[in-house]
Image (cartoon, rainbow, N blue to C red; front, side, top):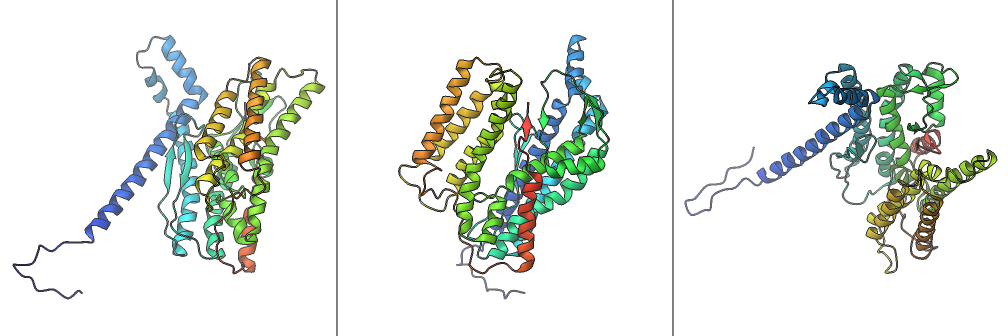
Length: 408
């Protein structure tokens, strides 16, 4: 109980200083809740309108002259239920991931925000770009750095793996259409193992059509795979720095360059296969699109590294706006390559060569590049238990790695 202070008619009116922080907390909570609600709607409607049954019913309703074609879509409870299952599964995995980070940060008394969910209804096949939390100040120990970095992906996988197993068991084999216009989801060691254990047998000439729960769990594992790249301040970047210390900065540069190799190897392998079949370069644009993910992430990681860097940028270094322009130009122009003429392919490849040359002279390929250096986090090494957690977390990247995450 606080001591009371005598009042005086000459004193100014007393104030309640605690009300301002409380009001700010309510506003912040409201903002986080609004972002989550918008993301849930974005994920739901993205799933709803990407369902092939929705497109069929929409076309049938329009052909029948129904004024409100959407009524024919929302009247199907099966389609709505599928979209709801996808939304609940994906957001549950993302929530587990982000609160794994948040709780670990609070345990170690590192100031951290609640998750900021990012709705993206058109550009993302999932309707979201995931979520992030913001942390203030430097993480003072390697133990805290490991816990904060590792328990996000581990918590997400604790949900994603059993949900994928259940969803795979409820998936159905379907006959291939032969049109070549579908989306092909990437496979990893972990996914192939779960399919072998839980999914129904797929006859020759058919493929497994994932249930909404399995597809959402696949998306959760895909997001986890990206976060487990040991680069910069991604989750695995934190984990690797807690394990290796400053040596991780050199490892991060190597891994980032290897991402560009993933793109090149995938493209060359596809072209060699075509050459053996006598197809030549006819499908070059299609293969560029199919392997575009790793090229895009090579540049996106450059943007993230430049935005969160701990060293002052060199005056001659590529700026963040320039990096954004490079990745946008490469990705957007690649969308026109599928059926383009050879001249268009050549122009795109020349543009790719120019971006690589820029990075050689002014970017990540410079020998003194520190774009992916991690902030220091104490010198005390990890104990045996936490070393095991770090190794298991990094090993999950190998189990989740998809050479071609999404193909067309």
